[in-house]
Length: 487
Image 1 (spheres, rainbow, N blue to C red):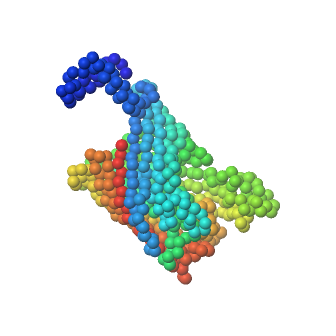
Image 2 (cartoon, one colour):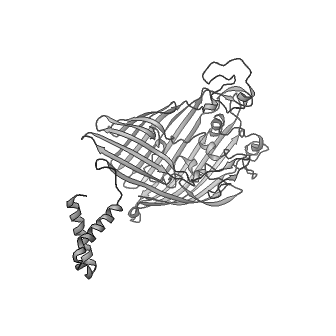
Image 3 (cartoon, rainbow, N blue to C red):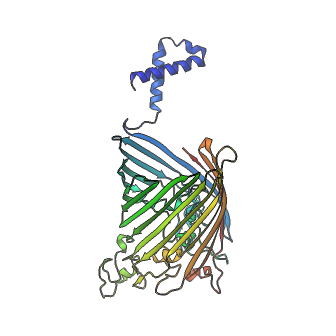
């Protein structure tokens, strides 16, 4: 601390002390020592950054929900984290190299210890380790801190941005564009609010595996909101409201996205569309084909050994592609808004199925979804915008794709080689989100209903089929009340 700063703090402290007590007017010969001690105390309790060249901002938010659910047979109330808001904190730094060039970094973490998307009928979060049908263990919500983003970047005002590290690629958040402010109680990634719940038949029987769940039926093997990866990304400067991004990432992944944001005569518009391609679905133990050859090598006409048959399924030549996007429109004077999102996921290639030692090629349906929300967002009460909304979505083909990629094996028929199976989820909801500007806070409430029409379940899950002699899947309803506060 330089001498001028010390004198300024000393003067402020002296003024405060003299105004607060008559005794402060007579500090005697110890006044300077007392002030030095107080200055040292302030220095010791102040958050510092490593140097004076890089600015540092600390931000984030905390969010929690109370969730009531009813699957037609069982109901309960859980206290949960997240949904669309998983509590997180971030450190962001920037430094100017010259007037056009900026360097920076982002560190972001989350501790979604009891995420609402991981809960199910047998695991409310606190009762961790509950045994599920089939002998597996539901150990979600262990409280592990997760690194969301660790990237460094260079941004040039005329040439664009390049970043490297672990974090969002070009299509991350692409289906979540929303100008209405519904995000606390609503999102196009609808499985965030019920995905972990196990499918239950109208006869009251649970599916025999925790992976026989709503998330598989809604979005297949992974979310429509792109997962974060180790990557290198380039972003163009914004031109007439348009921005283009492209990224390559581990392993054998790339994506590209075009975004736009603008306003015309009181109407705000934002949209994005993107494409991603992922061709890495092999763990080290999954690279053998039926004859023991490495995936990608020609098959050898030989009988596989028992070890090879019992190995994990080898996805020898699988490529998954997504075409997806979203858009939102807000009429500023009235607060009326509408949001739309959609996606199509295709699978190509073959895998080695253990147990029958055969190579199978995917011939099931493409996974498709669409989502629509609308309502009004206005400051009715003077404390912040009140958002009233309704939403509806449909998703088809999730169970077929999830099963083919091995995350639901044994519970559902692989829709290959002419097998006729189908799965379709319909969802609707209503809700309200109240912003409290003075506290950088949101309070929200929403009701959601999900229904599934499917056939192709096998073994102990036959009763889940919507076919003659079976009862079909029971609807599940979710009502949540939650809050988020930013810092």
